[in-house]
Image (tube, rainbow, N blue to C red; front, side):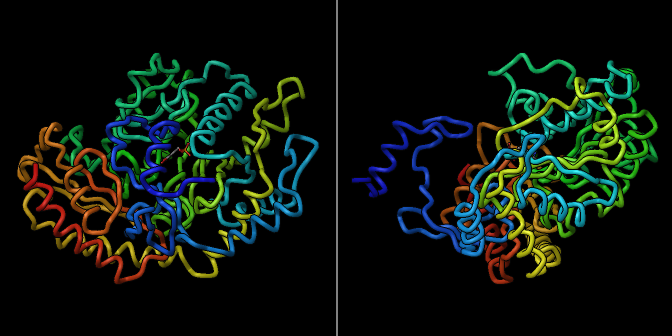
Amino acid sequence: MPTSSPRDLASLDAAHLLHPLHHPTEHEGAHIWVKGQGATITDAEGRTYLDGLSGLWNVNVGHGRTELAAAAAEQMATLAFTTGYTGSASVPAIRLAARLREVAPPNLVMTFFTSGGAESNESAFKTARFYWKALGRPDKVKIIAREHAYHGVTLAAMSATGMSAYWPMFEPRVPGFVHTVSPYPYRFQGARPGETVGQAAARLLEETILREGPETVAAFIAEPVQGAGGVIVPPDDYFPRIREVCTRHQVLFIADEVITGFGRTGTYFALSRWKVEPDIMAFAKGITSGYLPLGGIMVSEPIRQAMSSVPPEKRWMHAFTYSGHPTCCAVALKNLEIIEREGLVERSARMGERLLKGLQTLASLPAVGDVRGLGLMCAVEVVADEASKAPFPPAQKVGEKVRRAAEERGLFTRIRGDVIMLAPPLVITEAQVDRIVQILGEAIPAGVKAA
Ligand SMILES: Cc1ncc(COP(=O)(O)O)c(C=O)c1O
């Protein structure tokens, strides 16, 4: 008989289940989530919370969508799985790739499917190397990423990830991964007199390329808005300059839209806000709203041509069993239909504006250093001293105390250090947005006081 009491489940969990970022002491008192509806989730104790981060930035259409369950059931009953290797295809994978062509930046012409974000970035790195080898430039292999970046934690993705806490227990990192600065307006230090943060950060990328040698650099990868690193929104002049720098030095530009895609920031893909086209775009999360695992990359016409022009023995020898998984693709198609039918991209822009305005009213609270956001991707950074922006000593765990105080008041979300991050489902209501602001208005002073 399967056991179902929360206490029995917790002891089975402790005995048998390894979790992402596993540590038993941090897992004590963990929620066992059993149900979701719209922007809320409920645990095995029957407590319901606002889902402040849409699961892991991915449940864009909200929880409890029986339409997505029906799409999966129908495809599973018809043909749950078939290979997508060269020589085979499935109807949902073909339809989804064609649909993505309609909604993605216009220069991106073909799609390869993966099962998630890290696989997508691995695919992007390998594709960048492949491209230059196909063009007779085999030395262009390095990947430049940024501080505060999160690109996943498989070995190459971890090496691109710019948060050093992910590295030490797994080093050595993959050779050829280099980091440059993030255009972090609140804390950026590298600008020359008269230079904007965007200009300075783009200049520093160019200097990094020149230092490494452009003939050795395959690609630059960036999240349009850095997510797990603390919701870092770049200034408007950053990405247009980045595009120019990459083009000037023949460096491919990989946009990691794993979080920002599918409406999260108020446009279908975030980079289009700045009218910038990447050479490769990685996506995952919101494509199925997390109902099934799916990700992928889209590539530009020159990359497609390189793939078509090499002889078979030099082919793009890259693959996953689950590439183009028919059931995952069927769910993604239905998910995109929901996003469109319900106008969720526009809703994200509207609700995001409301959330950001609400959070800005908290700026007068002691310890609130910065409030930032784009669409439904927002953050509040708390600091020990607002004038100098000095952070609290990490040992005080202020961010964690604020997070816990918010949780006690019915908001479940994640932090990075002392940055409280928010990315609720795009279906969130006005009242729920206002409730998030109200909860943080209480939780921030409570958390700071407890520290
Ligand atoms: C921007 C970005 N890229 C890549 C990833 C990795 O995705 P996954 O955990 O599906 O491998 C994440 C995960 O949060 C992400 O936020």
